[in-house]
Amino acid sequence: MKKRTRRSKSERSIARSVLHTELFFLMLCGIALLIEYLSARTQNPILADSQYPAMAEYLVAGIVIAVGTFVCADLLEREQKQKE
Image 1 (cartoon, rainbow, N blue to C red):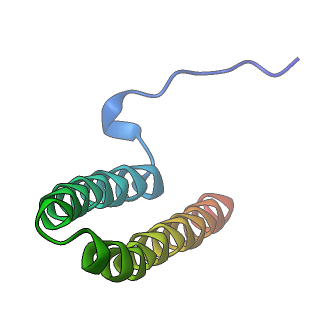
Image 2: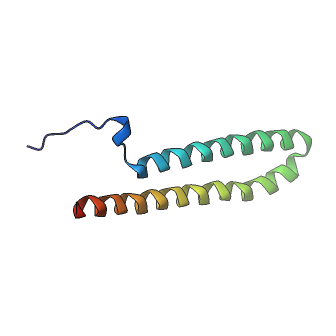
Image 3: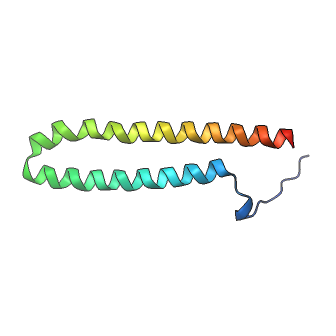
């Protein structure tokens, strides 16, 4: 049976920290986009419904980039630990 050890916050992996930071900023951008959309929808609903779904694709692209960054950083950390 493998014994688990708890890591302290200072030992948290860099990949995980980067992922949390990127997702935090993506969430802030999503909230800002939602507020902007709701504001535009009160003024001109037809224009807002045609314009803002395309902007939401940027959030999806950001999530894909964040996950890709996490995977690459995690692989690099594992490779570094194997060399040690």
